[in-house]
Length: 552
Image (tube, rainbow, N blue to C red; front, side, top):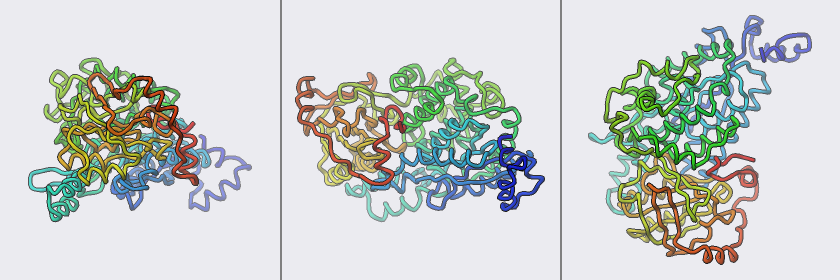
């Protein structure tokens, strides 16, 4: 056992003395030490219930003959961090989570790990750590939040953000806004739509690192607790058989994940996180590959914000196994791959059933013949960009309009709320990339302001920052190279005509190469917005958004 180095032999006497100080017995020191990474905290609604999940994991580990030992991981609530300087710390927390988990796992010589994440950057951060450590590991997430309800209409967090836009535009009363904010997030759990957290929890299941049900079982259901106990027991099987993350997270597993991403209509943030996780596994995923996969993968699900359905409904009608079974009918995924069940994907999904052809469209009757995400390229984004195609109004898939240029999210929001953005405009928010932000802030506030103001079918938004999984509309993010390093987005001027063609994966500004080169001669890098602390160090090391915003 890995833990023998702190348990066995005379030289380990000091280590044993500290283990005894923890209350461990000689009997326990004969057993494997299983680290349980708890992301529980009292500020993230998706994490407030993780103590219950962790307790269940501990029971499962103990039942199967291991010694469960809990240590923490941080997590940021993107919704609470949104729209102010706090969002600069959201994406960067992913690296802190990976690094700190690596440190704890190696420093204490755990034999295996159970990761208990739930929300946005916490999930990919722990997947990155799992790949880096490569010791037997299983994931069990905290589960999705229930959808809110007003009358017969279901709500989510995005309802509150768009409610602000509607209120500012005079479309709803203050009383109505208050009702929405009271009812849109009714329980613990990761926000109820196919936003970033649930996207990554679902893709963890697809990658084979979580048991069936991991991505969709609601936080409030006892089935989540049973799943946690099963995960605790199953990690002991992984340890016994020496099945490690890199045995499961193969290149083909990532192709499966990108394929399912397209079928499910996941958050654009998955196009940051999958490349980052793959990087830890020794693989490169690029945006051209995303387009290739999207072109051959039908979009089968329209979950919020793309449509009216929520994670709880996807769970009821068959969950991720049912979607994978549909996609497998056309041979679009490799079902022979190993998973943490110890079985193949084919074995895991053989009894899956699609119980509602509207929530999970059959493979021969999809919402669209192409996937939910596209990666436009062009002279405005030579290295690529990302858009959630499934959440774009049909009339905005092809659009041309004048640039309205802003150098920060705050300036753009003020202009939208102030009625300065008109039909046909293309809002440009720059210097919000990984280096320029720094931290690549999410733009849920401006996209929601546009939707709330009734401009969602006439106004586009492009940025070198990124979007919440809850964002909808013609919102194109991750524009690379970013403005801070002199990317073409830095050269835009007010009124430049921007051409967007999502079906053809194009993002262009109607300027000649000569004009762009002349503007480049006059462009000067800006002084960093932040020069001290973690963000300053992050800005110096981080790569582009289209390569996963990993640290070099």
